[in-house]
Amino acid sequence: MRSSKRNVPCDLVTGEERVYANEDARQASHIACTIEMCSTNTPYEVAVIDEIQMIRDPARGWAWTRALLGLSAEEIHVCGEAAAIDLVTELMYTTGEEVEVRNYERLTPLTVLDYALESLDNLRPGDCIVCFSKNDIYSVSRQVEARGLECAVIYGSLPPGTKLEQAKKFNDPDDPCKILVATDAIGMGLNLCIKRIIFNSIVKPTINEKGEKEIDLITTSQALQIAGRAGRYGSSFKQGEVTTMHRDDLVQLKEILSEPVRPVKAAGLHPTAEQIEMFAYHLPDATLSNLIDIFVSLSQVDGLYFVCNIDDFKFLADMIQHIPLNLRSRYVFCTAPLNRKEPFVCTTLLKFARQFSRNEPLTFDWLCRHTKWPLAPPKNIKELVHLEAVHDVFDLYLWLSYRFMDMFPDAALVRSIQKKLDDIIQIGVCNITKLIRASQSSAAPGAAEVVPEDFPLSRTKRDSRVFSDHRGVKSPEPLSVALEVPGERRARSLKAYRSSARQEDLKSHGRGSLANRLLREGLLTQEMLRQLESEWQDQHRSGRYGLASKRDDESSSKETGKKKK
Image: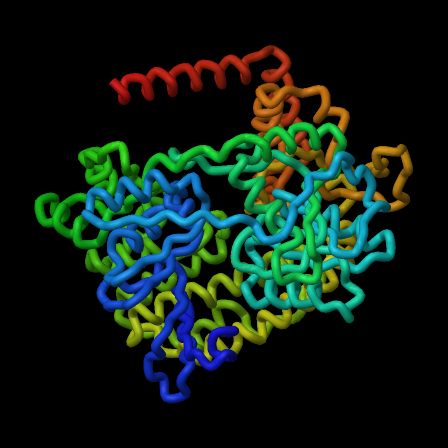
């Protein structure tokens, strides 16, 4: 850590890790921690809260609210977008705090170019192509390397160590890797020497306050956060540039960047364990999921706050409801940071909870048997995705080990193999193009395409035909991963696109990993699959799908209207 290197000892605390600056594990005078892990009991002279605009995040906003209102510090520095100034000022007014606002200008110029990239042949050293789905990451990285260029890859589900190694590789002036392909994961927490940001797309899948998946244009806040990574002060580039991959996206990007950032209106809240225990005292027979629902329905928050999305919490609560656990332990298991779209990780949490309930410690040997450790480098994309899931399982073990030390006793051993797994995943990411080819060659002719379940929706089409770029130049290699279709992009309005995205989502579910699993287990035949697709298309042509969606939307909007009244 840079602080410790400058003779200012600083500890690091995350949900899964504790790194002490002092060899004897004495607490240092400074501490750097994730927002969820900041202590509201320890007194500090100065506290710094970064990215305060995240206080409006539907999933994690509660952590920023807790830090802002709960930190015991003589002085708190709050950093982030100016859009949060009014809300923070109003929140501090309610607590009687004195607020001083200081505005800072960007130290290096940032230019939005008047031309799009249009072809990967026009890439230059220091370019970063930003995608909003794993499919697009795989597609673009392969096309980049097909042109003889080496690229680094960074996306959200990669382990932190792998992200740092990829960033280091890209930043190294002596490394031949001069191109970065990444998701918006680069927007926070990574220092990168980027000259030019290139938006591969300007639509992104998001989760709204109700936990529903939507596809929409990126917001001004998101666009600025990503574009701002170009030409950062202190990097090797004295100014930054921003453009899009496709010409028709550039006009919209300029409009998005020119709009004022929407003010942050409310701060997130999440029910605490103590609050739920109080409800449980009065409702002893209610399940944890029901207790959460009751708490939220009875909660009254003023306009400064909102209750964060609790779907993930309820999902885990329902999953482990049949396991006998005390309420506090059950609550902790349900707050575990995992992606519920990863079946292997969810299954592991279930096994952890079951063994925990029997008072049987989760040992290193048990975990190795469960994950089939040691593991080999991945031979295809599916194996890489599984290795990422195993890394998340190790993270889950470490997270629980700091909350139940006696039951998860082998944190040090797990951390040691997790570092080895990091290196294995790094090998896979460095050879990602080979993995894509292997995934395609291993797929049986006519079989459904294997796409991991956690792939978000994107404005793409799956196509195994020859790919043509915008100038009509054909690539000789067939691509079965997602490819952009610019003609459709120009033809659609955003409203029409959303409707199409819902249909593409249904198609992808029919031909994705669920279909593959049902085929393998003999529960579905290719003929049945074709029949289902035929019936769906018939319904779509007759308008029944659209009418149903419209009726659902109208019903939903009526319910919302009732609630508001």
